[in-house]
Image 1 (cartoon, rainbow, N blue to C red):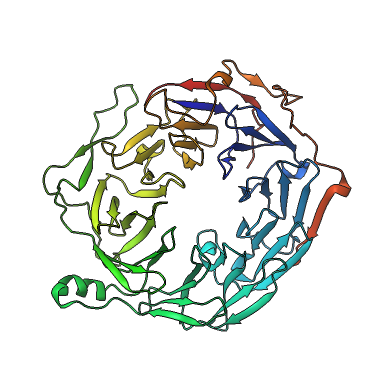
Image 2 (image 1 turned 120 degrees about the horizontal axis):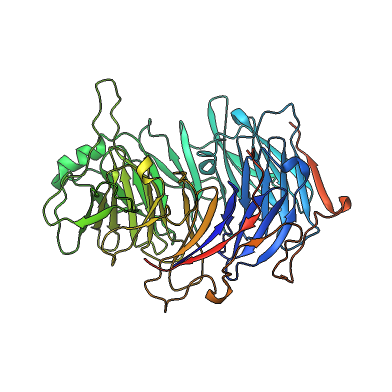
Length: 530
């Protein structure tokens, strides 16, 4: 069962709390309630935001939305029609490389090109703080160079100047430096607070000797892990682990009790936090033997196109199988090791992917230290996302034109990965660029938000009509609704439509595409099926 919302906009996102959907449809942002699909609020945009949008984000608490263009960052409130904040970037400064919210809804972080500075704008206090030389400043790497403490909102930032790493701790309100120190690393590759906020984890580059350091909040070393110990009874496996270079991946479990560390080998060390004592060692086998406690699912080739939409089928293996390992040419550098590891929300399952077997996903049962499932695809798996609140529920995407409109979900009791084919759901020519993420909905059945940058859809994984879904069936209209002129076609009591007067706007001077007309007709359709 799913709902369709048809629109022409490359920017449409669900709120972190799973209750709203914001769609950037110049000259407005349309915010709808997922439960009723009614317009919750319409936010009018300034004329200069009609094109060139580089970032469109929800705030952590789902109360504000951010719209960034080349030289400005705008912040709008979903609940307060009188709030509009603007941070202006001078034309002399190159385009920012990454923009994101800080620890709260009123804090925005702007990374400048080439790591020249990190600008933190506080829209509540009208203050701007600039921190020089952040080590990581691109969208893919900046998040691992900074971390906000869950309990107090202190910022830990990794900077680098004159060839030396530096860690600084900044106060939660005015972001002044409370303390700083040079970590005992040559080329640190990331840092992060533990979920309970007691410890700061820092790890060394994979080009260096393996090292993960646990610091106290005032910069003292509490534990220093310098690689796995060799065991005489597992010499061949340990030699592989020992020769796997430095640390490639560090992952903390949501409950803060475990740390998963991987290098260039096929092994993963699971350490106890904060003692940093190894609890178990997980090894990816070259050949996988099926058994009662291990599910092996292989994607099967489908029949040629017959005019009907077909999805990949998965068959459970009954004999030993070998994952599809990457074949390298003579001019390519060898690649190996785990490049992805993530715990589910219960910290009981760990999903991993190897660099040299990118089409195979390994699911480990942490309490028993056993391999629970192996999912084998014909294409490289590019997206892995556990459900934020429901344990043991995984979402996956694969690369390739034939997988462009496919999304897969898996759980231990399903008969292999289940596919969601958006091609028959989305109108028009398939774009092959489907974006999918879990919807944080308080319902029995999980739900997925999908968009191909023209149409967005909320799909429920309910197995029967008796299970609850994020929306109310009776509220789904059967005919298109036009939003030309007055957008409050449902008479939503909390609809607001003004930017606010000039005196209600907050402006900061930070020192240092749409090419077609928007289609503002929304249509809702309900599909029943699995």
